[in-house]
Each structure stands twice: as C-alpha cells, then as structure tokens.
Image (cartoon, rainbow, N blue to C red; front, side):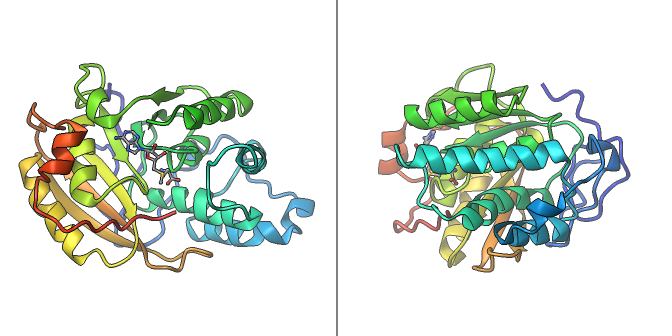
Length: 299
Ligand code: SAM
C-alpha cells in the first residue's frame, strides 16, 4: 500500500516523511517546510474573505504553519464549516458552535499534524474521526493522500460521507466500524504510513488501536492536552509490547490553540504482534499497563 511513498523533495529538518532514510527528521515544534510541488495552484486569499474577522486567526495560523491555500481549498474549508454547523443543529457532531472556533479548534488543530509529518504521498488512517478530525482537513490540504476515516457511530459516518461528496474529494472513504475489529482484517493490517486519533482514548489504548494498522517504519500521532505525565509513561511501556516507540512531543502554539496542545509522535519499529488489539471488553478489563482512569483528550 505504501510502495509509492518516496519523498521526492529535500529532507525537511522538522518533519517525519516517508523517505527511505526513515524518520530521523522528527520535529521539535518548528514550522514545516512546504513542498511547492504539493500545492496545486497559487495562493489566493481574496480580500472580501480576508476582511472577515472570523478568518483572521485561521489565516494567521496557516501562515505560521507555512501553509498557503488555493482558492479551491479555502472554499472547501468554508463549505465544510458551514455544513458542520448546519448539521450540528440536527445531530450532535461537535460541542464547538462558533465560526471562528471551528476554523481554529477543528481545522487548524487538525492541520497542526503537518508539523510532525508530511509527505507527497501517504496512506493515512484516522481512528474515531467523528465529524472528520483530523483526517478530513488533512485530506483537503493534501489531495494526493489516501485517507481512511474510521468511525464507530453511524450518523457521523453519514456526515463525513456527505462532506466527501459535497467537496468532491477523491481517494478518501469513511468506514463504519470499530478499530479493534477492523485492525484484524488483512486489508488494513500494517498498511498505513500515518495513523492518528484525536480525542478518542488514553495513550495505551490508542497505541493498542493504532499499532496494528501501522506499517513498520510508519508513524502515529496523537494530539493531546492536559497533564500527560502518567499517561505518557504508561504509553511508553505499552508501546514496547506493541512494536512501537515514542519519538517526539511537539508543543502546538497557534492562534486559538494556546492551551497546551501537544502532538505525541510514535514510530512503529516492528510488526505489532497478531494478538493485538484485543477485544474492547478485554482492553477495558485488563489494560496493557495498569492505569488509573485518566483521559487527556482534546476537542
Ligand atoms: N476525532 C474526532 C475529533 O477530534 O473531533 C472525534 C472525537 S470523539 C470525542 C471520539 C470518537 O471516537 C467518537 O465519534 C466515537 O464514536 C469514536 N470511537 C470511539 N471508540 C472507537 C473505536 N473503538 N473505533 C472507532 N471509533 C471509535
């Protein structure tokens, strides 16, 4: 699935990419270098849109990430924002109901993953994607990527499929299912270059969900906030049982996101043992590493 993932560009000091030399260039939080060739057309932030004050923190955050949107991408984000808030009046998709916060706390926060990982081509899995975060904003920005959005709740899958169709996105699918079941299917096992999950579970559980899907040498990124000291220590111990290791902890400081958000970056060093993930009930009953219930999730 990942044989095409060679990084044609120059190595980037602060990013994990899919180059042959592995993932030496892991970030410490500095802004990524862009691939000019990734951008389909020149940037345009039309002035009437720029005058919209709701958009200013989003634009400033994009600038800090060195991201330049095409007209098409900007329109896709604005349509996604509109559809999310509209559907949210009828079904519970997000607790964020403010225009500006959708742009920062959902879109910009999702795009902040590019501080830790970027590549011209990648197979990406977003576990527990909900209304599409972080997978759909990443797909809008990197149209060449193949993205799977995995979600256990049917109505959220329906919403993501609506967005995929409305924004005319290709090579992206919303799958209705549970990580602990799908991870045992041959088509999905050890198949992804990048696996992410935002606001889904504690770190050891996320690792048990994500490591079976990640190819050897692949990357996992979990956005988190709050005091993670104990959770991260348990995560590191769980990782060693799952063929993974901790790589980096990147602080995200972008407009509207100054609340201690971090990207926890992991590498799959060898294949995850076949017995993982265990059933949901077993995972709850017997955590890989004994833990007090301590969820540090973000939205
Ligand atoms: N990632 C999105 C975000 O950050 O906005 C949604 C976060 S929401 C708090 C957690 C989502 O994970 C829910 O939509 C839930 O249905 C989904 N979920 C929880 N456990 C899951 C599992 N084992 N497999 C797939 N999805 C799961």
